[in-house]
Structure formats: C-alpha cells, structure tokens
Length: 278
Image (cartoon, rainbow, N blue to C red; front, side, top):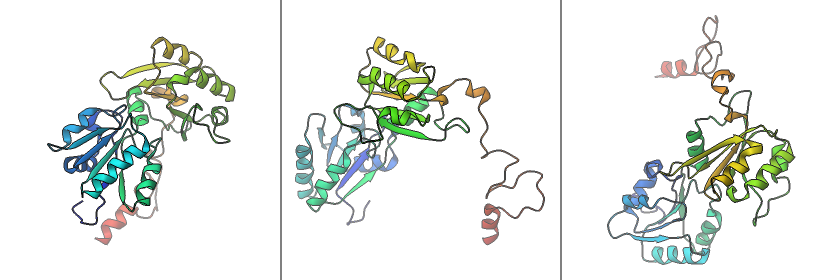
C-alpha cells in the first residue's frame, strides 16, 4: 500500500462486530487513514482504536448517499486517505456499488477489502457447519421482502423449494412473515432454525427452535433487528453423531494430494510431483 498509484479510498469490511475479526489489511488501512466513515449503527466503535491520533471520524447511520460521497470527495481533493467501513462484508447487502459508481464518475479509484460476514459469526455461535455432506451442499443468502422488493423467482416460497441451508439478513422484524412463507414454500415445520442476535458482540443472543416455533420465540425475546436467521437440517444437533463423513479426509479416497491407503499402482500425487520438480 506504499504504491503512489494506490487508491485514496478503501471500502473495508468491518466484520460482524468483534474488532478482532477485522483483517490485517483492514487494520493497516485504518492505521494510516486520515478520514474514517463507518456504519455506526452496525459496526463496533472500538474499531477506531486502530486509528492514528487526530483522525477525522464520521458515523454514517444518519447520512444519505450524497453526504457520504461528498465527505469522501472533499477528503480525496485534499490528498487524504479515506477508510469507508461497512459492517460484515461490503459485498453482501453493503450498498457499496452505488458509492463506488459515484466515485468512479468523479474519477476516483477505490479498493474493497473483504470482511467477515455476520453469517459466519452466527454459524460459529451455533457451532454448526453450513454445508454438511448429504445433508446440504448449498447455502442461500437472502432477505425477506419488505420495502425493498425481491426479483421474480427470489421470494422466500421460491427459495424454500430448494430445501438448502437458508440464511436471512435484515429480516428479524419480519420473522412471522419469514416463517409463514418458508413453510408455505416447502420447509417442514419441524425444520431446525435459529436466530443469532448481534453475532460476536458482547450481548450476543441465540434463539433456537423448530421453524414453526421460531417466530414466537424471537418475539418473546423482543428482537426486531440485528439478527441473522438460519434455517436448515445442518442445524440438527444429532448430526454431530450421525452426519455422513466427507471424502476430503477419507483414507480410502484418492485425490490429487493423497493416494488412498492400500491402493496399488496409483500414480504420484500432485504434491509428490511438486517435490520432485524442486
């Protein structure tokens, strides 16, 4: 990042909440940024502890697009480095495209630094793997339809027909609608489900229930925002004892880095060939 051609604007994935889940690259940018604009409604303010003294900090929760872009362009015009911090990963419900497009229109280059999405912090809190062999090999990331309309074919009943692991952002306040539409679309009412509130934050809360009971449990906890909803058979605790094993570490399975035990006449693995080349 010492390259003189490096952009002055960085869109940073701030992670799910815990400041220690920032990437090393994100921290390096924060350490040298002159201006920091962060999503203060969803990002822990403790990320600013990585910033240098005297940094100019703005919370963007109450700002419109034009205000955010205006601050960035003013800073760039003064030769300052800007860190625009989004919660989670900027590529998922981050509204980054419209900001990047506005900057490009003004002739300003930017770089996006990925972050840890809250779905992964939620999966960690639940102690689950989202893709279990022969149970689910597909994860759908989506949201419930509210003021933002969903494209054709992407409404919850449509997605429910896949019976995949389903993750919903921005949908806690619509939990009753979520449950009704998922059952309508084909998820059995007893499908394991969970909502993780403020995953990785100190006040994190987990609500687990069969899908048919999830809405009532969430309402009882008075959770209306900041929750990740996960639905699917991968949440079944019984899988710890009964889940099919993957082929990745199966001793009888040959792949490019390992020959199955007891197999004769097998050619060298890619790893062995690489060693030979050295």
